[in-house]
Length: 381
Image (cartoon, rainbow, N blue to C red; front, top):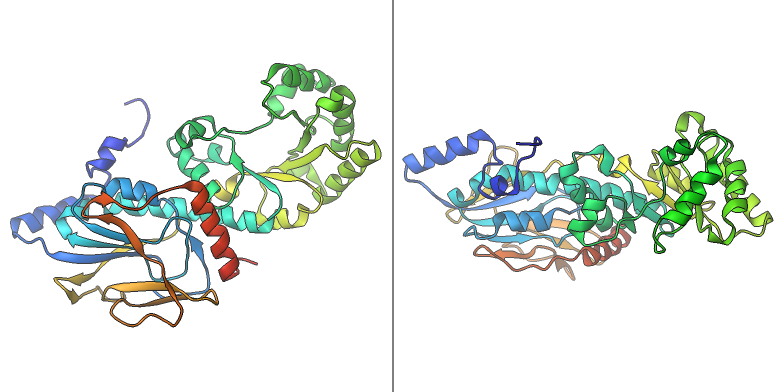
């Protein structure tokens, strides 16, 4: 084994599980018991007013493919607030060992997609790139970038994730490139980048390595002229000062010199609060740890029905449930056997039918769904 990675084959075989599920299956097999159950994946049981974005569903579907169960789920990108996001119906032994991996797929991706949507809502008209893959194990870089796209980001920087997702990664240059040319030789670094990279790569100069941001921006303009598409400011927070004022100075200097067509991008530990404070004075953002380090959604999987009868542990709601969206953006949880609220839309849709995947997955569709739901429920205004 080269890296500490649980491989796809082990996950698919049910080895990515907690030991007590193996013990449970041994006990059930010994007792010749395999009840037909309904199990639900939930975070909060009742709506709390705090919406989150469902992601990770494609991996969850792949995990349960060929398992003899029927599964209903919210489509990827749906915003949820209480109640089930997934319902599994079938013989318990057939899916018990997959609970750990299933919750992991949904919990981690949903947390990151929710953070990404919060960033997008904070800067609705800005260009957003995900820079956060460096904060996680490289084996899940594509999970990070997919979640960012579902949350509404325009792109990401990770090359291998681009291979997985069939998307072209984006990026500018690191401080290391400028440092390789030495203090006072920033122009040489910018020129090397401009002349060295492919024609399809935007010419974006990093302008804060050694001196004042405005000074380096004007030097980049002088050096690159019409070749310069944009500048990026990535000053560490300990030296940043009033970042908004710096960005305004840079924009003013560009405009005064007749270079208002040069875009300004900023990055470096940004949060939605930062984005809201800067969105009117910069053109785009690179957001990293806020998305990749997001707290996973605390999903659990619980049996709610056994052999057609309601059943649940203490503190959980028994019975098969449905969730609805009402025209006013309300999120409603009810027993599936009860009438739906007036004019409500049922949110759970078939994901697998007897182990066969029946739902299509498309990142752009999921992102559009998240945007639409965010408006409907007034997500983090």
